[in-house]
Image (tube, rainbow, N blue to C red):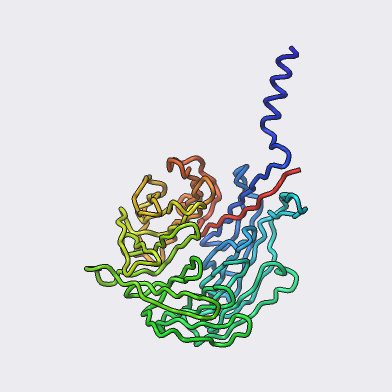
Length: 387
């Protein structure tokens, strides 16, 4: 009997994290296309913790630079909902405590008219406001207390793409087809780059270089202090008409950058002169890097999920996950993608669920019934010691 009790106690203790061991808590934020409600799902239990109404139609959902706040953009209603996931850490010097509280709406921000493109890096957020022609820049530390922000007036109202590198704000414009550089501290125009980028759309930053999608290639803008240089990466030979990069994904641990490219992807490095096409079974809807930067997860219009070897673009594995989507139907609610440490999450708008997929073998591990019409996803997380 004593041996049985000892074995049971040993097994129970094995399930308890060791003293000083950090654990990561992750919560999924889901935005509904029809009700505009934000739901927060505890992924450890697979349960919805809370639902929140918002000011209007959702045009985008993103995780902030700190990892615990979600930003829901309401472009047509000129507002941004900042949702606190309820996860946070308390720094005690030699260790951090993980705190898990109920989620709540931290703030509803008026950052400008038609907030559209969202950019986060180095603890700062930049949002381009299409109708007012300015960029709101702020940190997360005082959100919910003062909601102070700096607003940089740019060249004109446009469908813009912002990027921050140090104290330089890069502002790309769809209609102007160019990039301007501003001192983010003063709002002063530093330089209008003499490098055209027709129909500019989409941006990502790796290191000191920002990449902007253009109708005829990709514009790379490198910032050193406040000195800037730009160069163009062209299309490969025999690129079909209207095929272009309009969305860009980069990762600090990957030397290769990716963009959408017709029915496939394009890949490039800082040293390349032209883009390299990567074939896919169908047009990409969403794509993002895994945490280590070594794999790219791609959701395609046929409902398939794909793992690519990021350094080479080689297809590692594919699996069907959700029903197909007509990529040409602009009114259709498309499935969304969020990628965590070990799993990818794909929304199925017609089924009212989020599908959890293992990043090891692309097998479905859970189906989270969130209800409604899930349209946008983002992951929030925090790591620390549980007490």
